Image 1 (cartoon, rainbow over the protein chains, first blue to last red):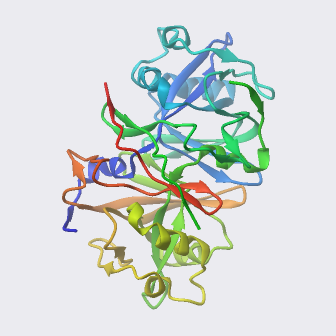
Image 2 (tube, chains in turn green, orange):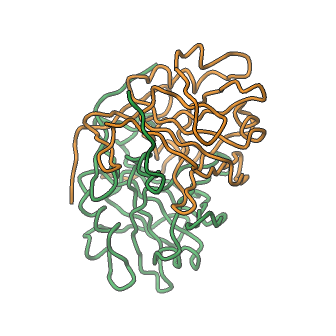
Amino acid sequence: MVKKTGNLEKFYQYAFPMQAVILTCKDKNGKTNPITVAWHTPISKKPALYGVSIAPNRYSYKLIKESKEFAINFVPFIHVERIHFCGKKSGKNIDKIKESGFTLSKSKKIKTKIIKECYANLECKLYRSVNLGDHTFFVGEVVNTKINDTAFEKDILNNKKIKPSYYLGGNLYTTISNNKKQF
Amino acid sequence: MVKKTGNLEKFYQYAFPMQAVILTCKDKNGKTNPITVAWHTPISKKPALYGVSIAPNRYSYKLIKESKEFAINFVPFIHVERIHFCGKKSGKNIDKIKESGFTLSKSKKIKTKIIKECYANLECKLYRSVNLGDHTFFVGEVVNTKINDTAFEKDILNNKKIKPSYYLGGNLYTTISNNKKQF
């Protein structure tokens, strides 16, 4: 394996494929805005914390700052076209839920709605915002979770049945294989 | 798709599969310690920031605090057994590099070594540590990158050729499919 120096400005692409999930947030009138994000990770078990990195020029940035909550929606690969749409278009002037065709359902512990077509949803209350470089890392406390009742076996994803969506960079996406290695 | 309430204590498993990467850090004598992590994400483009969540009881936690640097190594799935080993064993009393069989090479901008068998490496200088819940989020500034010269095409992973490693939870791992959807 011959190594060369990579492109420092594109360092984040070397971490792809990362799961493309849809964050939902709400405006002052309760209207839901979905945004596709790839830079996100669990952070802490107790309290249950989940972090997502968002640039200040995004419409969702303002909505999270104002509403102090958001939901993370894990989207099957069959909806990859909608994922791409929610990542490329801004919700500032359009209704991205309406245009993407996603269906919403109520959350249990927050006012922001979740996406029905997703196999898992995390309802989060804003716990902390950390300004890091040119993004803000929004850390949410997970206050409730919803899952598809056949997607997980003992809370581990059935990767033959459920295919999450992974962002490769550019306009490219992929998914997970049926392969499974157990130790 | 019938939804049910998930297990809040296991919320992070709903975000899996996440890429299992190996973080390398060094002790005071320069000895390299590899630790497998799944909770990590890019954070900012300029400056180039990468974050990883580590629990304070981990041996690597102390090493990162002291050395103020670390590297992120993206490991092909063919090495999944070594990935599992570096995640389950602590380097406090054993030499995990020696026992795993990984080969090290020098970094360009930091003193911590990188893993040769990986298709991409990010050399990071500690930029900030944020205590979040029961973990610390270590944010590194990426100061150099190394990549396998045939793994990426215009900095996008060739997912037919290179198979990254994904953690499913428990002792289970998977990888990426050959599938590719372009918009």
